Image (cartoon, rainbow, N blue to C red; front, side, top):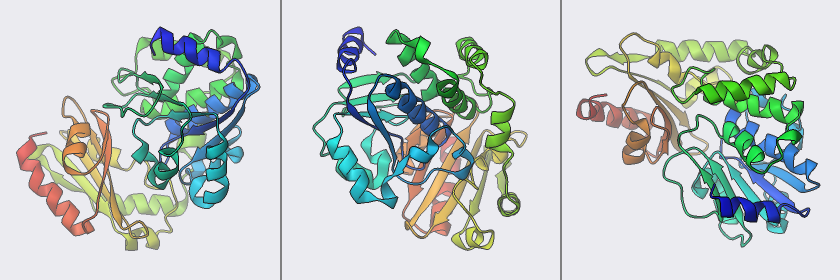
Length: 334
């Protein structure tokens, strides 16, 4: 964030305000960690913050401190729209284009108050007055830590805020395995642990809470896995019928795409998931090395994200979407 923007925002935050804090639709650990961390930080400044998620977040994140205070737009459009219209400032965290909030975009795009963007994805849209956008970071939570530090208020980061920040760093770094995990990332994590973060309990809460049905769904996804060794690619799919058979709940498919990437010799992996209630196919892409799945998702599947992790969607049928993907593979040489 430019110094003049930081100073102007610090001046704006000097007096208590009604503030809305927004993650992207289908929020993950980094989105919820960053927004809830910001919620706790702003409360310490005597503000009146409210986190409004576009839709429900996964149950494995429901342990986070004050997650029960998060409002969900899809569950109460009238109440959340009222909060947004009364807000004097809006923070948007872990996304950089308002369409990433789904139906909430209609309300957000009509607001005349200043927006603050804190995000690490590529090609930000021009909707925010105050912008902290940097693709060098592996998580928005790491940027939230820096943002608080740049405001000269690092002493306000307590165990609660540290826990939220740690959660986002842990999840978006692939448990510290992804390339954007730097020495400074680990130095920040060390500080968070010193503040009381339980770094043995949190991974268990995030990754070891599988239900019997979610493991069965994983088994079906692995059974459906297709490997194209000549193109270093693996993909799988899950139909609505399969989701229903194994009693799918939000979060059950989290991380399945990474199993394809774990196969020896595979550099590009994808998963296609049918969601009939939304009439779309949701897609996750992962890659290793230099193959840019962000650009691939933008070019072919109305999506985007990072170089090695991105998402997309398709309005074709599941079979047609997979067929489109298969035809693209020989052209891109992942």
